[in-house]
Amino acid sequence: MADASLPKAYAWDDVRAGFRKTVPLALGVASYGVAMGVVATTKPITLAELLLKSVIVLAGAAQIVAVGLWTSPVPIAAILLSTLVVNLRYILLCASLRPVFEQRSLWQKLAGIYLVADENWAVTMAEQRRRPTQPGYLLGGGLAILVFWTAGAAAGYLAGNEIPSPSRLGLDFAFAAAFVSLTIGFWRGRGDLVPWCAAGAVALGVWWLVPGPWYMVAGALVGAGVAALSRDREQEPSDVQS
Amino acid sequence: MFSPDAVLVILGMAAITYGLRAGGLLLGGRLPREGPWARALSALPGVILVSIVLPAMLSEGLFGVLAGTLTALVMLRTRNLVVAMLVGIAFIAAARWAVGA
Image (cartoon, chains in turn orange, blue):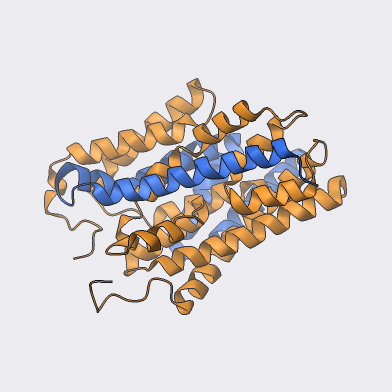
């Protein structure tokens, strides 16, 4: 706002570009939505409730866990606690979005951060590695996730068990395949080797030993910590735009 | 259509999730722009992805590791996200079909 040369935060072209680039990943998200919808038919949750949840929470893993826990009466404390634990990683994901929201107003930040899922976060950060990327790109990707996730959940709920299981088509591997591919683009050079190995080792160790999703946060924190302590990176340009 | 308990828990989930997202972004904006904190923040995307990807591959067993490695190789050669994803997904589906899983 203060800087006249700053591009519009939410230009239509950016929203469209982000939407398009996220669609391949959103198709994978739709298949998890279907799986969640099918599970939901065995629970005392209505379609309206399922869709409301999909639209306003928009966090795949947390919602799937919540549907699994859903009974009548609803175990409110257990669901809220698991939501907190499963979604803790969003603190780190969203902190790393700083370059995308550089110089944006508080309102632009608060609006743009709502539709952040793993997939559009990763697509946006990959784009940001190539060129300065605006919040509209992230929002467009979030809209793609929202549409496909909600449509998948509704389809799964309505079709119930008549849908062939996504795992027969390998679709349950879509998430892993998408994120393996995206990871390739984040390699910045040999300086990344030690932080990445540390993150990988800690994530695998915690995943093996501790139930729940703690492994992501643990691996990411240790990897970032190792990067913080490495001195040789001092001269490299950071991802902050100057 | 909506039970009060369900709406309450859904609103609670939404508030927690949004709070973590907004909190993370605002926290990131307040971290120093140079030195260890900046290095940690700029390393975050890569180390988050590594921490997500390795367990996701291993949780699918040997096929997952092979499919993940193949996906990475295709991505390295083609730099095409859709092609790499499709190869990985097709590989795991074919491997499961071959062993009758």
